[in-house]
Length: 363
Image (cartoon, rainbow, N blue to C red; front, side, top):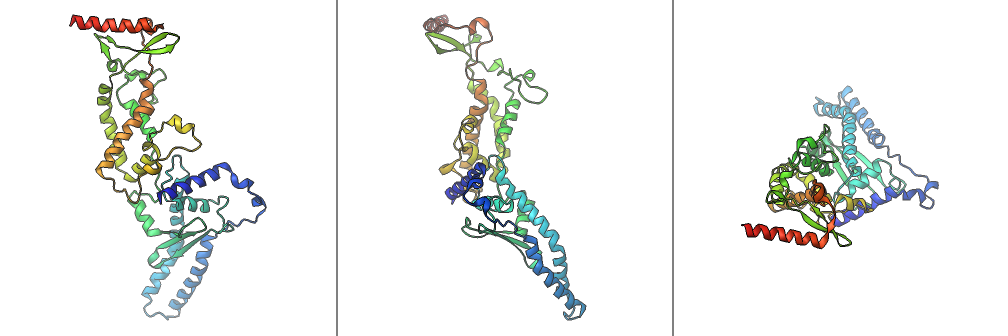
């Protein structure tokens, strides 16, 4: 099912983004009916039923009429319940249009949203239908049907209300881990306070604090890189063990927060973490990477076991290092002018060997 979810969700997204229907032969000349008249159809029959019950009470044809009066009160309250129910459904389904939506969500939610928002290709003319039913006890039920559904999508008002009251969503939204990681970078204490602006973001010239630079005899121990033409340059080396010890508590706290809402953690895994693609790589793709066969299932993998929680924490840390930290660690030139100058590559390498040998002799 997960593969089908991905296939259909991504297909619909691509069709909507491409405006394909505008160029489909004959579509703009077709008589498209998008008037589902959900409330009109429901209350046309409910109104007749209400009138019949009201007449029974007025004519004394229902005994003590306790049950009938209860049903009348339920019918009177029903329109307000319907409006709230439909509002909740629209709010939940709107998640399919958010950035980084996880295509592992049930594809029926994407189809239902297209029906409700009158997207081309999802009209009554195309075979889609929405029906709202009033149930005993004041509950209501909405049913979506149409060509793409394997079976009708049925949503019960009390079930949806129960989910929302427990801070659970019908349609899972993907948390913005990139926003959290941007904040984490600032909070990590890898940078001195003067490198953080009033907007709580790093300045353009921000550099990792000197205490995290690898040193040799009290001086920066540079790595030599080949820049071509027999020339080389020094770049700073950073103590990754020290850096990781510094950032681990902050990462652990962030991961714990994400795992407190496990369905959202599954979405973050599927969209960001499993494939470990960078933001730059996603920007170059026509369609962002998704976890595909590495996906976690909302039906099968929740609640997450300890092994998956540990996998999540490990991949979160790698994603943070690759997408946020690495830019401050890669090919950073010394601040000392003479150390930052271009030099003969072989001479520079030999000088470094001599420096290490000399230090070993002294020891």
